[in-house]
Image 1 (tube, rainbow, N blue to C red):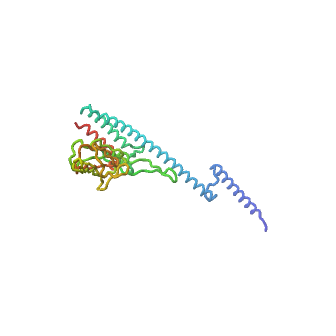
Image 2: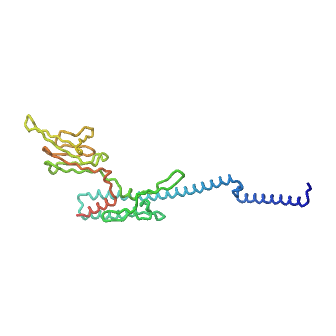
Image 3: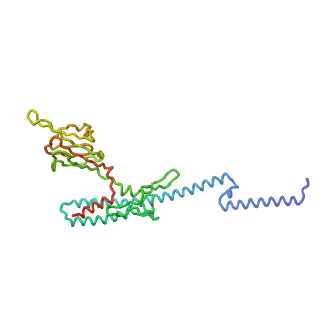
Length: 316
């Protein structure tokens, strides 16, 4: 095969073009500080690089989310610390209000101070973050959660708890609903006693207390007294009592049924977290009804509780 001069020139020109193109690409790689300029340079490396970039973007977003979550929780913590301080102040004022030497005017002064604290509490309950979102409105971040009423407050938010993705497998709670913080506070276990039959007089029942709030069931009990005997030396009177819950005998703290228990006045009666004393001479058929409210069933609104207390202090 004969090689012409033009073929030699063309081959040289082609090779120079290739070398210039390779040099240009090398210069571009140096300038960009990367080996893969286009996916066609190395499809596998390009796919890996894209995956790394996506993960970097996710990690950056997760870091931002963690910062936002921390800021939100810090703001909520600050608000709740402020609320705690207010409640402690109120507790002191309530104890002070119980001073028997105080007259209506002095109690009204305390009521006025408490109303000021109540307004501050509304400010805390309606706190907004830097974006204008309400902290304690659940998912309804644009809705003002609490509106003052004559009996306390109306809650306009929901019970939603917002979460933020802080890494690939973890979400962090960043708020508490106003329902759980301000409206759903566990009250105290309580009970009341009424004489439904017999000869009970004022003062026959005293020293009522809840000895174990966790044991209070919320049930209604009957304490029935029985008197046997003729009152003679050979057959003296014997007084006993029994405690039932819907007809079922109730056990004492040791697990023994309170059935036909000897009554010696004054008699301290203890069962299911309750304690009270019955005195006086009992007659056959005397019956007490003990109505209880368990702590879990007496949840209270902080605002309605405080409003009720203030109204009571303002009542002569």
